[in-house]
Length: 379
Ligand code: CAA
Image 1 (tube, rainbow, N blue to C red):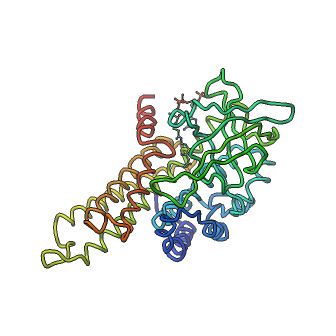
Image 2: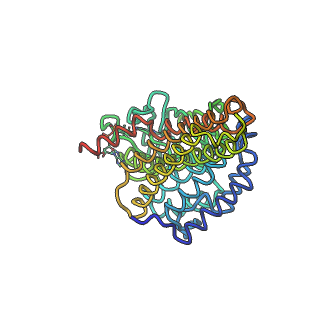
Image 3: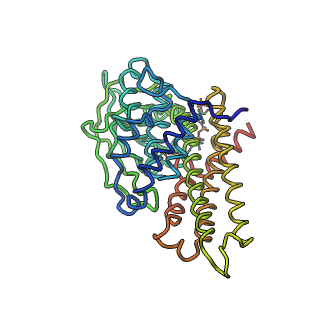
């Protein structure tokens, strides 16, 4: 396995790094307080090509590798985890499944605006009573002539209310269980689509999350992604790539925590010397750096396998599991190193802890990642 970045991958990571330092990081604390969705940053990411890194050039993307995309995401997440997840859901959970499972007509129609960032995507799988048990969804889609009519509700949907296109999983044949679920591309403003108020969240507060209800929403059969009954596997395929994305987001958060803790430890004087000279602090920094390298190597391995067209579900789950726990650990240690100051909003580390927590929950909880890993061992 060779994780050396190609020239193109380095260029894209550098582009993201510069953009993140210049435009994303400065307002991150303010956006966290206000909860304001960063429309302007999303527009700029689109203009820079960061919303369609892995989309082929023929559809308006950069035609770059998964490795380039994930490296860019890590850079953005290091500056602002909320901004990163907006691009992550859009790319991994909407554009990529359309590219993988869409017909030529669907790809030509839906991908160019998504790849350019002119349109934003949401992934609608989770429901009030179907979280970890994704197959328990109750939203239904009934065929009526050339249309399907969708009824139901979706919960915790990232980008809900600010996106243009929804990838919706609905039951078309309940008797078939997971094989009765079908995926649909639904315009976000179609008649019958309604949005709940944005949820007040512990972290990633600038990303918008809301409930979506579908009441008699009519979509043409041409908007069905894949075959009837293929929706669950499409969702699982998308989430495999998404889990690498959350691993990069968590790694970015952990990196920000290490950077903040190192900087603070060098300048904070106690007992007549910078606390960085105390072994207790040095060990915390060493553990943080070791965890971050392990997390990054795991997501890079998963990205490498994805780029090679090999199976990577287990590796993606391992990367997300490790990186999210490392992010929590690093953010907690960074607060510890900051002492009382770290517990206040004067320093960024309390936000990092709040942002880190969600990486253990969305796109499959840590428990679900362990289940995916264990099942692949026992298969
Ligand atoms: N790729 C392709 N197909 C897959 C797959 C994968 N990774 N995993 C499972 N499948 C297929 C299986 O092969 C099986 O296919 P067949 O019917 O052809 O045999 C089918 O899917 C059903 O599989 P299971 O029997 O394993 O399904 P299950 O009901 O036991 O569920 C699970 C498995 C892993 C627990 C799954 O429900 C799961 O991943 N749950 C977590 C859900 C989740 O991650 N939600 C995230 C919400 S989205 C989000 O958070 C985004 C956001 O906004 C940030």
